[in-house]
Image (cartoon, rainbow, N blue to C red; front, side):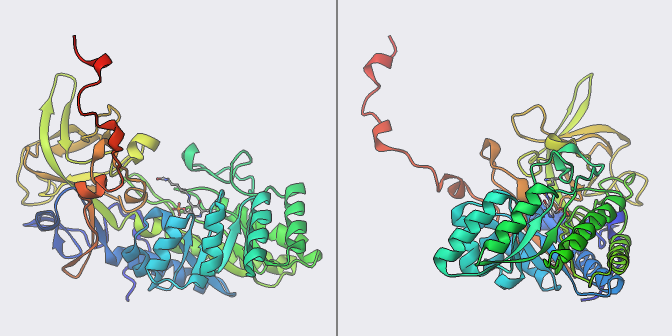
Length: 462
Ligand code: LLP
């Protein structure tokens, strides 16, 4: 598939988003038509933007780095069999962090040896699942995991290949909830005594094979420097381990590249990141006299965020003296990021705005709060959006919702999770059905003893 553009993360909208007489379209499909067909709210994923971003990672690292390389899709960003498979077909491996994500990757038909099993608190069952499936690598986060993995691998007569997750002690400038490389982070093993002990245990573990190191510094990062610092920490450790006859054959610098959620955001492009990291690792190896390890990156957000948008039905317009709000038929249940991280999103009326995009109908623009339908004051998708009055029957599109929206969605207020379609060349394919009330009720159990033939006497009304 062709690469459309390597700097797609500078844009807030998908690469194929266009505005015309039918309002906003993505992938050649009018958003209005998609909602008529699949219902609202609706997650829409643009295939061309995913292809562009995934290919930019694979080809960018391949051209910048003279050694072997692999891009792993961090499937926590958007985990679905259709999406996982589409990305795998572009040459990427898959990173999973739980039994559920592993089951999804396997159901998508991804070969187990292209799956890396991350996760800082894997349960014994999850370890067994990974061993049985034969995942390519276990990413080990802590010392107890080494013991557990060795015991379970020995019990089932299997071998496991290991990458150790290092806490590199790097401060990346991003929201504190998604910084993971700093010294107080719950993730990874600190270099020094803890790492020495981990390596000793690994050497003594007959069923485990040490392959290398992983260093992930955080998410939604707008600066390439922390990635280069992580590369330096990783290569310094690799040099030290080479002296102890423990070659670091693989170096994984994690995910974390940021994307633009508003026009004001200006993250580095995928090409900038892969070029800088590829060059830094190659030069760093040369300086230290190290053979080139296999270089890996684990992007999630940068592959799917910009490709996605969510279309909502506006249910009502509400005006008070203090503010005017558009109330939509979704919100924090399908996108908890504004409530959780103060995340800021851009939106447009599906039918367009007055004045700035040609022939769109509707009134003069003013400032609106876009609020969701959950019984929660904090359920606000956009605090201040400059929009025309769209009227109670119109639709709104929130851009850049491809990452960490569906994957973090909930059934709060017993709202059903929306459907998801992948669009391209005028075609829309359903990759996730809208949940039904039957789905919601499927796991409830009503014990018979709760159902009394008559009201309990002591509680009967006087
Ligand atoms: N690798 C590791 C070890 C990770 O922990 C993560 C993300 C990634 C890769 C992928 O990072 P990305 O390229 O997507 O930034 N829910 C938060 C983001 C949490 C990220 C967790 N780890 C949000 O909505 O912003």
